[in-house]
Length: 505
Image (tube, rainbow, N blue to C red; front, top):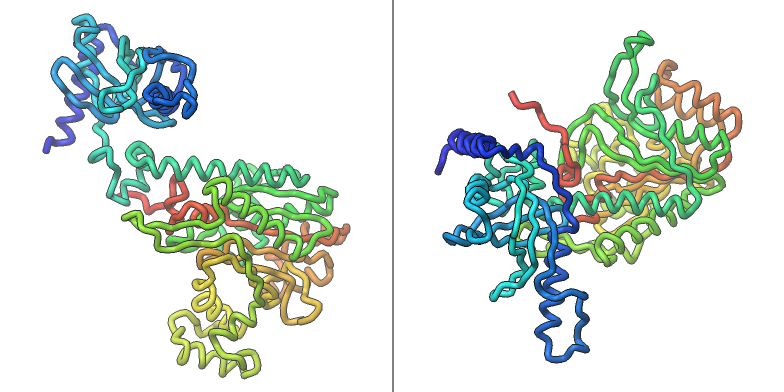
């Protein structure tokens, strides 16, 4: 196996060889007329029709074999047959085979061709044809070097196996793995469809501050930064919520934002310190309104990106090991789901007995800290024993009021709030609330959450509520987790282009 340094040296030598011939690939210009896959598929269609004994079975694409095209892309394979060479050219649309014949070119051009390497970018002109093996191809009549890759491609073009390299050098992952490219193209489509969905319903898209004097809207550890000109600390936002509610006060009755949040907490296959959230608020709606919104949105996204409401998750061997059915959406109360796992009398026994059962009977000793309050003990039961079982979509409703201080108390159970958590694929995808718009009740709830520390209260937000916020429903959707579910990925790092990693030493 050749040493990487020697391969780099060889490529630099090839670059110098091009320079000696007056060719600087980095200065060349070329405008492709179409994409590789477009040319390939159209030629395949024409060839299939041309061979058909019944013309009614197909439709000619309008040009005969020998149609000229201009393509550009990266060289991903090279098969040397002596005076004939076959190369694979790949662009964002796909791949096509190139056929280089020595007799087509001058000696000087052929010498330039021999200085091309895998991963170089080139532009080509030629005519399309189908080989005897049925492979749509381009007979190259002229070419232009457009970029010289001074480092060899990773391993082989079948893809990267080293997970560390895949995440640290995502550009190599995108070059080598077609499925990875498709995943991130699908993520882009998901974001576009989300925006279309809300615009069609009359929502206004906005942008709110990422740096905030007081981080609010969630209970999480923020990242700190310092503003030199203002001479004070700021925090990277942990949620979008409080600024969007200010806009409800200001008369923007339907509002949404897609943006980054930052939480200075752990990493896992479901958590990344910076992540993308959608939050949307609708005046005169409630948590039931927002349940319909979430269900309609996710079903639309599934049909758009997967073409079905039954999402298959496959293992490395391509075998289906899980199917998520988005056609049926269950609704269940939080307390009822906990009772199913912890016993019918769970909420009738004492807090001490609940803790004992959780630790001893339910084997959650490692998940329940000594300082946990009673609602947190029950929360651990839900998180560890209930949530992972909710593979098909389930709206878990009426959560304990301590968990969600920004929501309204339930009319039929003052220990709960009008809240849902939409759980799919064993994790929370979207919370939704009937938003608290009573400024007195909101202040009291936030003071209880802050434990009496007034400096943690966002006074400007509370003043905004005192100016009158209409009744409203609101939702948040974790875009990364949503993409994991829709695209069959089990790690958040596989749907984030550049996930957070420990810096290399």
